[in-house]
Amino acid sequence: MDRYETDNAEEVLDRTVKPFGSGGAHITVPKRWIGAEVKVVRISDPDPADE
Image (cartoon, rainbow, N blue to C red; front, side):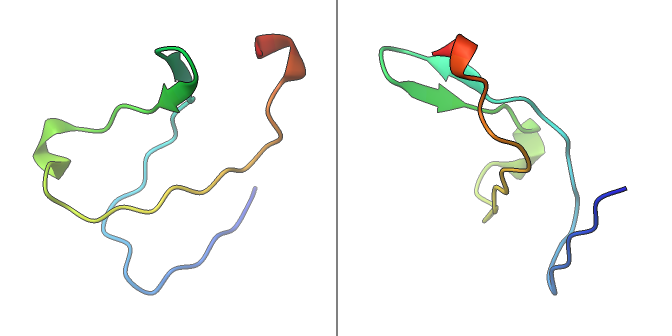
């Protein structure tokens, strides 16, 4: 099991980054998070086959 520490976490989600448009990517979070500050942590290398 991986371990990550933060002093101010409220909630944690596991998501996969999806391609978006012609050069970007995004993740989806719950609507109730709108207006909240978030931090994103990459925990694996990207798969070159997905490029």
